[in-house]
Image (cartoon, rainbow, N blue to C red; front, side, top):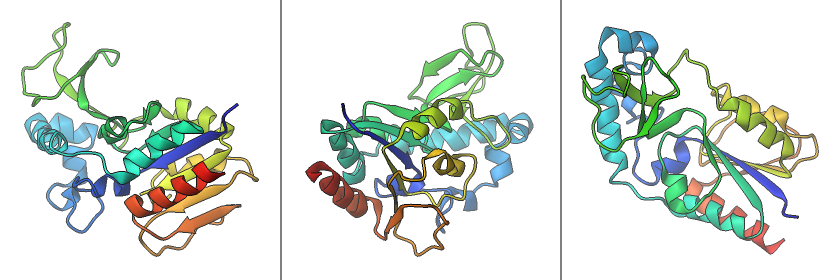
Length: 228
């Protein structure tokens, strides 16, 4: 029986594919206020602004390709049962070959009904005012905004509890609720944090730090795990 590897990923893993991250110095937060483009209140105030913001990001994503960190995690499936839990809304894990991916914060290449949350559609073009679901309600980005529930946490928590190995890539373990997932690992579970930034590491048992960017750190760790 294969060991269970659970990987939590954040913006840092996609940055090397050319996707701007919200929290970098040149990130999109500087061009838009969070509350204007990533909250239910912002949507109610100015739907066109919100749609323009996500249409721009969707166009950018369609020009990006997975990097070595994405493909290396997919290679782990040769020997391990691997589940990716990502805070990212891109599809680069899937393009890189990973077969089990949970998107905590939604997916940029999907749209959903504003009134019927179960109506979700694959969507690669711009969303416009007037684009509706089959029941006539306006479509919105299939994104979890600030202040909204994160329903996929109910899928993520049981996976983390099963983890034989837990890996964190490209996220600083400070953005909740995703950062709290590490608390569901068992005490003895080996844990790895891969990040290029010097940081004050949280007091987490059996945590090792690889101080590298994602493409280098993930490639190194995957090679080590495949040798075991």
